[in-house]
Length: 121
Image (cartoon, rainbow, N blue to C red; front, top):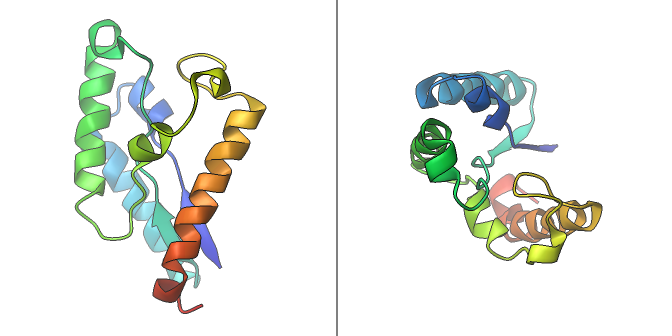
């Protein structure tokens, strides 16, 4: 089994630090790997245009969290995926439309297919 973990934005919204989010994500990673799952962490996706001015602490902690996550091999860079999402697939700056989520799901599946040998498939 392969488990994609895309979490942390709401933690940051509730003033968790980047280090707290990393600790929580690594705890989840350990729990699921101990149960035999292959775990892939996904960085916290981009925030709306202008977020660095409107929510500077959130954006600073998001970028710091992602920088720490990307030090590990096999982490999906959500910001890179989201660059491929057309503007009409966004509900608002934070959430995608139904089609947008389907598109990102396809992008994640494409990434996973390229990683199958790593997982022994």
